[in-house]
Length: 160
Image 1 (cartoon, one colour):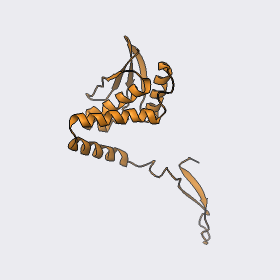
Image 2 (cartoon, rainbow, N blue to C red; image 1 turned 90 degrees about the horizontal axis):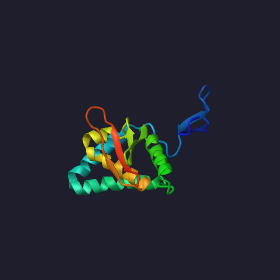
Image 3 (cartoon, rainbow, N blue to C red; image 1 turned 180 degrees about the vertical axis):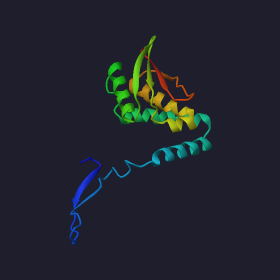
Image 4 (cartoon, rainbow, N blue to C red; image 1 turned 90 degrees about the vertical axis):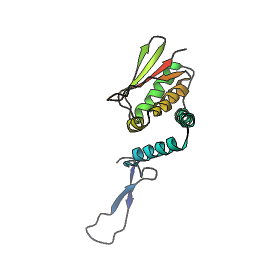
């Protein structure tokens, strides 16, 4: 049985009714919700309307850094393992990342942007993920995302 449901025995008192009822387990009530994209887009539009560009970008940067810290990153002083851990977290959110050498850096590419709807509305959302990778690896990161047609996320992470 999936972890998002739990079984509860019930006394129905009527013949033919099941004696077992399945309900959402605490903390999993919103797993199949489609409200998150709508809510995120609305929140970003509100912040964009109320804040100047610098404040908005600061919030996105802090959001990315916080995501890394809340996932225990960086876990070590080893760049390679920190990068692998950071990519695993993003992949768990719906990305499909790969790391490729790029001169004196590593380019992390993602062909399945987990926040594509938000990026189409506000391209600076990519800064949150750049800040995430910077915090997670302890290295400077610049974003080089491609936004024409299909979104391709690209984050260049300095090796030293």
